[in-house]
Length: 432
Image (cartoon, rainbow, N blue to C red; front, side):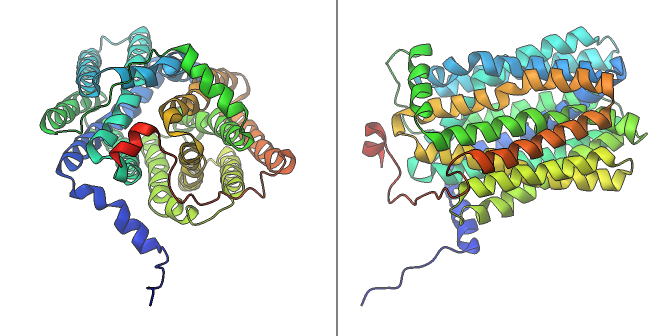
């Protein structure tokens, strides 16, 4: 008599998600990453407040994010191939070491009151270039440590660590800004890189299969041509673009919301950022696993984007801190559903030999839009007001989501068919 098929439950989903932590190497590396991400979010929060103190300008906040994101857009066609052709451990050691030195240098400038806005512009651009090279190598290195059989769970754990850092880091930074000043967050971030560097030295990874085929725009164009022939992939890219341009860009002007709208200080800004992190963490821990049980991807992504628009509109009308925190919390419940679901589904739909380049394309089209969106919202906020531009962006986010569901043929009814086996490249078949 055959055993009944065990249906997946939420508890089983959580249990499977934590299985990769039995792997000592992965456990050490993800632990180091979690510490480093905590420092990164603390510095990011402190840096935004330093920019605001130096300039009192929403456009300056936008310029910093633009300069930090621009290398991601420019280097995306090459970054994935770079991580495939060279030793990922060495790439990470170099990029993390440079990022550590930059953090300490910026900490010194802030501590001694020598920092000027152009310093932050330069540091933002250089750190963006480092991150553009680091990100694909980091994601691939997780696979090297976990093996392909547990890559999805390992990536999920890394995302959980990111969301915890995103929730705790800004809140801690807000406390430090109020208690001892901005420089402390930069010093702590610099020290956090020592932990991740130590973790990279300690772990042993699977042998990396080096791609000897030349990279560059030729291989990237192949991926673009492939995606153009897949309507549902295009839909996911459009949703990610809408959410990034009209949604996530609002987070860049939260210092102005804290100061001008709420009449608060650095601690107020930290509370707003902490609310965002809390929403993203809850979404990652609970909503994402639940959404994986649903088949209609178009409706999930469309509903999440619409949800974000509604609560951004509420934020635009609020001058009361608890209501603003609540609005940002609910907004941040929706963002991971759009971006993480989109990236995950595109990887499921992609041939194995294109997955890394598909990641680069998704990153380029979504987060690569931040240079434009950051400049737009920064300058627009100065001309029409912070609350007015948030309301405008919320309306565009709502309209874009509704129009996508209404007029993209088959999107609302699109069901993701379960795969008996993931689509594997030849090299992955040998590893499985």
